[in-house]
Image (cartoon, rainbow, N blue to C red):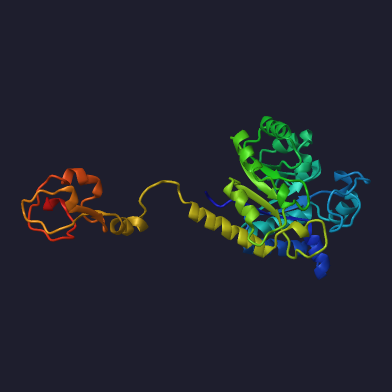
Length: 345
């Protein structure tokens, strides 16, 4: 298994960092990109929307209001919709300069259009899985499409995949996701990754994580072991900041740990081919057994079963050939504890 493609979901966390540090949102976003690149991330991801086109003004909150007290979705999105085409173009170029891919989730048709020349792939939110005209519009763009499938039945996922294929999309990634912020480990349901891989055999499958980071980043390691080829997690520079996403995001050290885990898992899993490895050649020889004489024997004596005992090392005749050796004659005088070789019988 190769290391999964790692996406750092900047989302809108950088707005809170900008406020905390007294810097511009654009400078904060660049800081996030810098730290993601240092951590070994493959792709920096943002979100492109305007409050007026994503939600009605009276839409209620669906997040943990003890962490983010804003009461309506509209109010929350208004706080974080300051960027447009100009700002995302700057961030796109900056991300590419840092050696990472760039994408941003469009939440309206205008964003989908201006992002076309910037994103390395389109990302569709779980919230738009059933927005089939929009899914089709994105699919017709001719770029890879990554789509999260949180809060959906399998039949709805199947419909979205069919719509993307009919629109001509050739490269689809399904991201298992639980649309709950944060997701309790009891609800992570990572085996859905296996389900998606079995049902949708001609697409790639990954994981969009909303579980709060654990000390060993075991959630992401488990997703990788279950076959996730792409992993997306929210990214922050300070998990203690107030806001909708910081409390379930990973910081740069979390991401470094996760990526280190992926590399280690890839190493220890190996190729799956059962063979004798180079590192086993000497132990194989020294730890296996050979036929060894239990007494002194004279040339011409016939070897009986009681004259032989399997002992280490395995440099002589293997015990598997006992039936061939028993009944043969000794070719020269030999002492007790001699390791038999074929020229001796």
